[in-house]
Amino acid sequence: MQSEKSFVSWFRDSSPYIHAHRNKTFVISLGGEAVQADDFDHHIHDIALLSSLGIRLVLVHGIRPQIDQRLNKLNAPALFHKNLRITDDLALQCVKEAAGLVRVEIEALLSMGLSNSPMAGSSLKVVSGNYVIAKPIGVIDGIDYCHTGEVRRIDSIAIHQQLDQNTVVLISPIGYSPSGEVFNLSAEQVATAVSIALKAEKLILLTEHSCCNPDNGEHIRQMTTDETDIFLQNHKAAPDLIKLPLTAAIQSCQAGIERVHLINRHIDGALLQELFSRDGIGTLISSAPFEVLRPAKLDDIGGIIELIKPLEQQGILVKRSREKIEMEIADYIVIERDGLIIACAAFHANEQDYFGAIACLAVHENYQGVSRGGRLLNYVYQKAMQMKLKKLFVLSTQTMQWFIERGFIASNINNLPDPLKELYNPQRNSKILCKNIE
Ligand SMILES: CC(C)(COP(=O)(O)OP(=O)(O)OC[C@H]1O[C@@H](n2cnc3c(N)ncnc32)[C@H](O)[C@@H]1OP(=O)(O)O)[C@@H](O)C(=O)NCCC(=O)NCCS
Image (tube, rainbow, N blue to C red):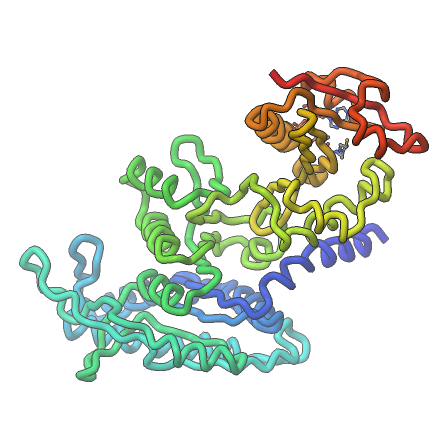
């Protein structure tokens, strides 16, 4: 019974994300290590589920270990300069073999539809093609990189045409030149270029490690691009397996991708946990802060109603119609976290009579206790100060103590300014609290 209940509430909780992600374009980059891992089919099942939920998917796969294994078999050294592979003729042969093999393996897994597997009935379509146009890196520091290249252009129109047909697009880290040459590319660079060219909503990098602070081992939940830059400056010795995705994340965000997710591919179901749960499991990198306090917009009304509905039902907040919120939306401030409204307050100012009232203060229960309510109150107080108001009022039935601890004092109806007196509902019998603004 308990597990049925938690299943239902889990499924309901994930529904805002299902709506939010539908018809959005996500680019997912998986390293060659992920492809040859035993649990790779789990990732493929999750990817198939994302596609079934209407997400437009581009997969970019890596082939680094597969190239190394081939070179090793041939007793040929893997040549690198400044962490970049030098692709001589022999290495290029290995690149082509590795890319072909990995592509076929992924296509095969995406084609699965066995009735007793999570892929039953999925009938996914997948295409690969010459979507990446590349040019040679050339000679750097006197070192000829031979067939190692860099992305010149992405045929985004052709990729979008495939995505419009609900087809998953699979891209190898290989590019072609107009003269028919083949270049070995970095998978992270391809994923970055593809996400930028497609104006994707998200770039998701499945990584070998979780992104942790090397100083204290703590998992980093989110960083802005500026913070990521500082992190890289301060941790120059961090392994490439972390530095490369972080660099890709900065580049993508700077080019307009709103959210880049780094997810440890060793965690089973990590993709689903990251995309369909409130706090995710990976590291989110974005140019704008992950959580912002800002004036509300009309688009926020749905989120505000969702947030305050349970509090209205419990009688903690007075009932407000959608129309009333719509009319007063300019008075509202919200805290938005990863696209969701998690806190709000309304500040009704009366400049003529030098007073203001705070109303509809609410913080979602999962986010209480870390000063979000305090920040909203402080914002209102600062605004009231700028407007040179003299008093701030609040009516409360169950939260008096919270306001008293923040400098409000109990007052009575005789001290209420007339416009508030007219609105006072004696049946509700709210306590009246007031704070002088100084
Ligand atoms: C009141 C509310 C906005 C505070 O938000 P918040 O982000 O948790 O606020 P803060 O982190 O700044 O403050 C947390 C502290 O307030 C306390 N607190 C929470 N609700 C309280 C209440 N009704 N009465 C007294 N104290 C309360 C918490 O116990 C916590 O104290 P602690 O740190 O000593 O444990 C939030 O609890 C909420 O939305 N409550 C339901 C709606 C509501 O009552 N709105 C006010 C209508 S007038």
